[in-house]
Image (cartoon, rainbow, N blue to C red; front, side, top):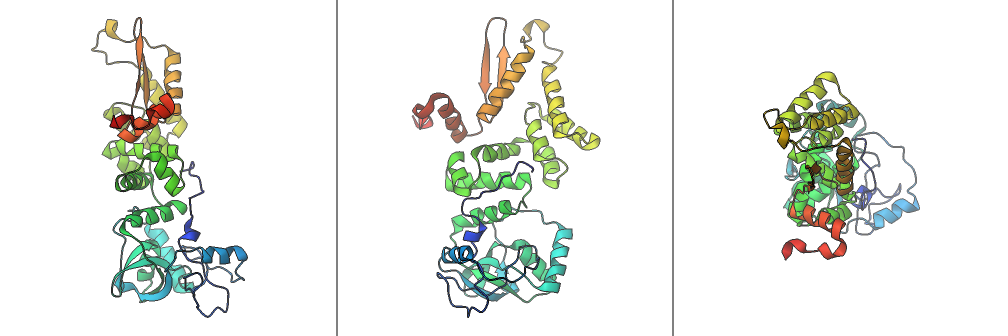
Length: 336
């Protein structure tokens, strides 16, 4: 998704301890013992260099109680709350080759669930590739992590590396909202994403399953999917999704098709006398309101009067919209 932005709250550097300076004897730094080479998650070798002051500060600020170990691959089970469901086979094979050639450049992150048994927190792709490469042991950072932090940490890692498809990301956001019991704004603060990004991504879950499948496999982008959400009729959404794939429509062309479809008016069988009068400017006004409230807005005009319909996806979403309209007076309005 081209609209992704960086700037996660703590960042992965604060979650995974960095390697110590060359020649370190493995003593703990700020509660962290480490001894692996630097490098990225994809197995790309990194030239050794003295650890900077910034890196040392990162190590000292790392998660307390985390230690470095070489642990048997067979003793590790995947993260049951891993938001990422699709692992590219070609990329996995490339990482396997890199591990065979250079070794694993960055340890995985696990937690101990019982004696000598571990559960993945971060690095499932590296763990899978290491299995394919035939490794019996794998470098790992073992740290204490509560159950309610498993999904958050796995989501942060995947967002940081832009590895989730839009539907996986939407489902993960929704699960975090449900588990934490927070609003969109509070979740945005916790994971370092903007509230509109979270809200608009979650809206993708409203699409029909057939359209969601196309988004999940990458034939439809998140931009295409958001444009389709402007259509009320599920059949119209599915039909236009097929056209996007067949004709290679851009997001801009898709938006134009959506506007055209919406301007066609009610079904022919309805009486012409009952059709609402809709001036072209009203569609533009509805779009401006939709952008302002980050949700779908309809502006319907009758012969003398009309109405504005603002959709909301949850109680939290309703409170957010009410607060935008009423200000602080709207806080807790749903509990009254």
